[in-house]
Image (cartoon, helix red, strand yellow):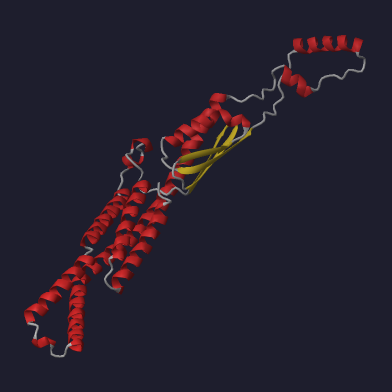
Length: 314
């Protein structure tokens, strides 16, 4: 599946103890880089979230925000009479030494007697975190796949343009050689006639044709780009296969852990574009006329555009 590394996902889970919210934001990166922004009370959940993301994501810089809101229990809890009697006796003993000692507040009495518990239930909040992470990750992955599909369609359009340029250059080569042969023949004829008007009487037609054939052969060797065109065509086929395979991935393939893949599509594409750019450079260096030079420039522009788009693919 072609997935973009730029995406956003969010989720919120509620329980009797409170609400937990999580946000996932990512941009492109060569490796998987997970950064957390959590309250201190939720630091213990960082490992759980990191593990779930590492099972699904292969590349990208991911920023994670988590917040929580606890629901306060305003129900007045009953105080133990024995506890109150013990506090009262202790207060009398203190006031015998410190007459103006203040009495404890109701909140202090509730807290110290166990009537109000401010501690978090770790199991409950871990369960809420798991649920919220799964929901946010589903939203996050859906956004990545939608953006990845748009990128794949755009790259397929560019691949079609490259294939068209390669085909046009391949079909133009025979005519290019013929044009060069005609120019060479005219130039040799004009040069010989200018140097020696009677020169043609001393040179046979066979010798003249052999000389033109020799020069044309040398020229054809200098501008021979058949191998470069063949490799470019092969690279375009590979690009289309990679993008098409990503579009037709099944649900089972989507659920496959990232670590089990032999390599991410983004890295494969990056290597492929390096090879395509090398062939385009060679094509430009062997250009026999202006049209081939322009074709090489157009190829390099399209390949650079593809490389920029592939930077966002996982």
